[in-house]
Image (cartoon, rainbow, N blue to C red; front, top):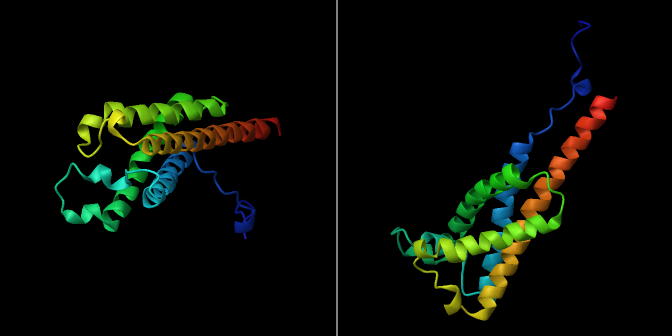
Length: 168
């Protein structure tokens, strides 16, 4: 055995990049909070379900059922990757949970006011039931908090590990 070869048990695993952690956080955050939203719809806390993002496309009546909701949850997970990467680029160094909460409220405003014309099944906020408005705002706040805190925490941990490695 050569001296410069390392045994497999002595090799260090390369840490996952912050970009990849942000992508994973975004996908699972989108899927998880969409599932919570689907549950809220199931228990009639909100009149909106995740499959509303499929309504603009003419892809068949299946989009109104469970299959449509499950596909929409997956698609929201993919869209959430973009949202998480945007947070990573803009706010990853900020350590306050309030940034994530404000980010969630901003996303809610974007979806319910800016994107409203592009989602024909989404009525204006003034026409939605009060429970729907309150539930969706809360879901977006929790989603923003999840994305924000997770990404900021990973960034802080990575910087801490790098500082620790340079000091050794």
